Image 1 (cartoon, rainbow, N blue to C red):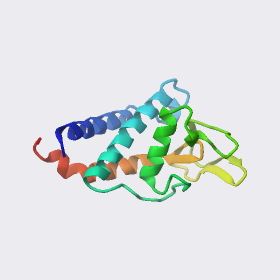
Image 2 (cartoon, helix red, strand yellow):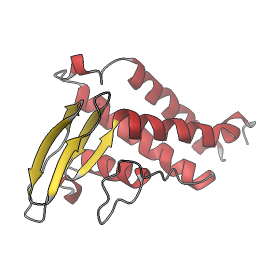
Image 3 (cartoon, one colour):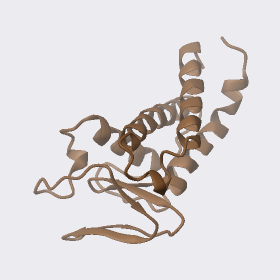
Length: 165
């Protein structure tokens, strides 16, 4: 791994751990004005980490609870889609349907039916988790974001412990 990518990975890991650790994503902070900004920061760092994990080791590609569509087949794709929707206000990845109905940073804590548009049903199926929706894309904090982060760290561990090259 080149030095720049190693530094990026180390920085991403530190930042993600700081964001998880500060409590901004806890339900009691649901109305916090900076929660969405923290989530965008999280998605930028996590997407970069997923990219570098795939580049140097292998893709993080589990599919548990992933809402599959034309551009999402696994968790790395879902993270990319949500990152794109976060960072590009005009992204089609914010769309719920072909009619241009859009949505961004909708959070559901615990088990609930968030919304239904035609055949698309967006819901959170787990009491002990929170789901974030951007358009037709859903990421769970524990089942997707934290798991992908931990898998990425494990896959990159040997590269990050190696001497700088």
